Length: 41
Image 1: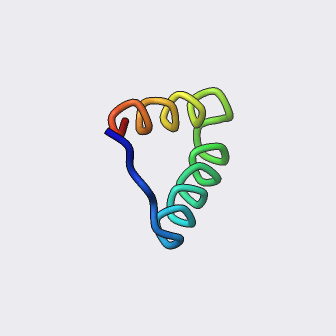
Image 2 (image 1 turned 120 degrees about the vertical axis):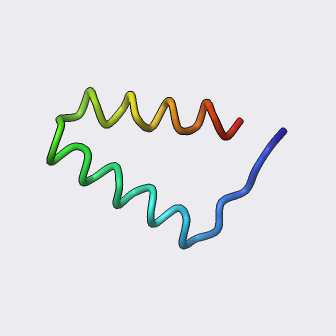
Image 3 (image 1 turned 30 degrees about the vertical axis):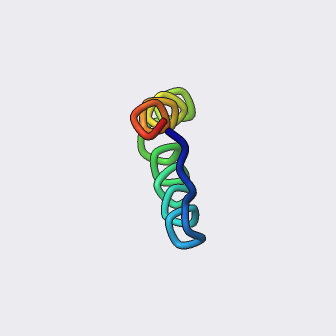
């Protein structure tokens, strides 16, 4: 099942990723991102 994100949702995900990098580091941010998209696909 595919999905399409709105522009606002894409901006939110970018903002979340930037905050994750600042708070928890790049590795944790990448893991969060990968797990999020695993759920969505």
